[in-house]
Image 1 (cartoon, helix red, strand yellow):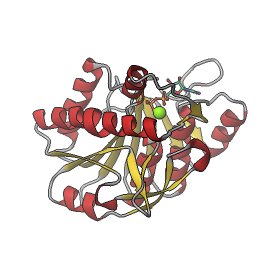
Image 2 (image 1 turned 45 degrees about the horizontal axis):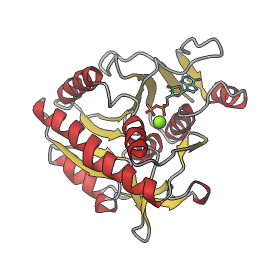
Image 3 (image 1 turned 45 degrees about the vertical axis):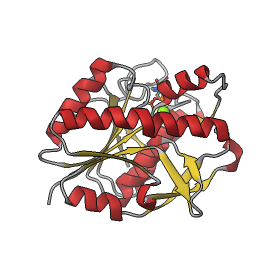
Image 4 (image 1 turned 90 degrees about the vertical axis):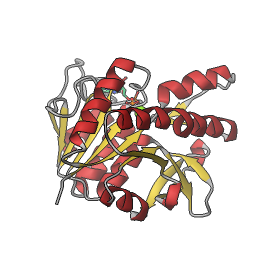
Length: 249
Ligand SMILES: Nc1ncnc2c1ncn2[C@@H]1O[C@H](COP(=O)(O)OP(=O)(O)O)[C@@H](O)[C@H]1O
Ligand SMILES: [Mg+2]
């Protein structure tokens, strides 16, 4: 059986053509020998578009507050732009990529987190569609959109989505690629290895904040539920010889 790697490509990276092209080339190569699921965000590009439409964005604990107007822009940018570009890049590099979102095939069912608007938290993963794609040799590329049990569309944090997919598919590796070299300590030095107790300390002391919170929560969730290798690393460095912060139980 092939090993499975779930990669989350941060929205903080999608605007850099150089990083994006290098990453997609490498991922296409990896996908020849391993099964891969790619999950992406689109934070930076969503912010650009919200600005164009004069919508002011705000965050609660690293999660984007999402009203109806924001959601339509979020879905447009994620599924209509970022997902298209990443899928195209993979196809150009020889991978058989298929772009979907968590709502397609009811793959990810979420529950609304009411205090931040139309934002959901995954409660169930229906593996069927993604499994069919992987088994048929496709590389699924997922935008971080899902729907609730009634089919209402929700914005979900891409880190949370990646973590729930890694758990559901019993991934061998989960890699969060972002715009920093790993998790920083209080002196902004990369911590090479973290366990769950260390993380508790870092959150309590607000050394981990903002966008790193859903990422680290995704790490805790997947490590606790059996994903063997979990990393937070810089997108510039790629995934082949991975370096950054490894998270262990
Ligand atoms: N302890 C920490 N170590 C590293 N980055 C941190 C830490 N605490 C907060 N951050 C912030 O988290 C950001 C990454 O999250 P985010 O901006 O959501 O990126 P992505 O688009 O990759 O999800 C970093 O750029 C950094 O500003
Ligand atoms: Mg983020």
